[in-house]
Image (tube, rainbow, N blue to C red; front, top):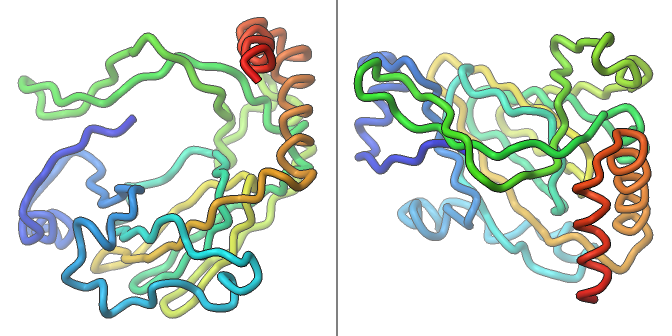
Length: 233
């Protein structure tokens, strides 16, 4: 989990523009409908939804988020339970994509959660381990370790670069890693539509996860959690 800190927008701009040095990756990435909350001053400059997507899904977006950062910010490989319309306003974003059918190659496992906290002595962020756990993808597509993760060698990525004025439709549960580049920082707006849990994709992915992460990766914790969830249902 990231370290979160409030600051004036001008202070953030000074970091992005290099006027103020920072040893950390500074990124506006709140995913709580931040455009209408923290950045309502520019809300009227942005469409409330993506009309064709709202019509196709028969719903409005759950959240509209504002993103602003630089090339220091690179996501780990992950998936989201949302239909995603991602529009780049400034700079470029490069997505490395894998469809849900590539789940076999992902080596998903359950890992200890942690959060970044600042060290006052070094002014750097350091990880603090938390008690909870989360299933996650351990492979870095840019530098894959095929010795530790041999199945990833069979994965077939789709790499797409989104430039200013472009929008990417990213379907729910597609695995993706995102990089960005821009001399004056990278700005994007994304629209998250909740996925349809009644179609076959969600239970199919759950089955893959149970078989591969639970059985093949021998993660008994995941199997026990699934058994408890089934009892609660």
